[in-house]
Image (cartoon, rainbow, N blue to C red; front, side):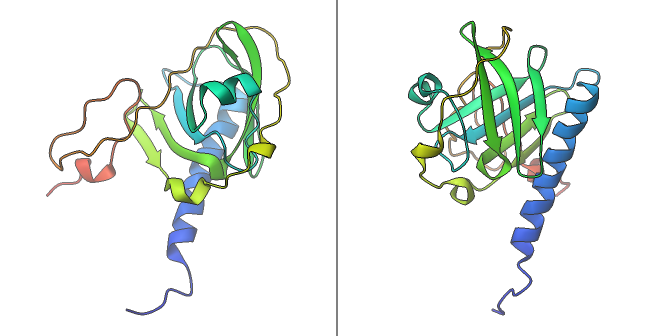
Length: 172
């Protein structure tokens, strides 16, 4: 097999992260249109992720946040997003690099993106600095379901968000 000097896999991954960046930037600027809302799962110990020690203890491997009605101060940069959310009535500020994201799902239109978790794993607990407090709101995240093996024709039953494989919608 020939060597891929162009690295199409990296280009495709970066393009898909660009879609995610654009969607979040639009939401930061204009709010969420219609019924759109986002489930974002990320690796909590990835380099650059900033969570409070309390959240890191509660979600030591990965965490799913929901951006729907009650979030604030969404800021999107070239390499990360920052957002204020409330967990158990306690306001928190999260910083999540795009490279730490495992999946993105908008259930209002059944659109999802999934990224290879090995790309984001960089054991760097020192990067998990306490998050800055933010104003109060009520958004309770649910932990992401563990990926279960699924049959090609029958999706796995999970609670919460479901990452949908695009192959399920292709005509055979």
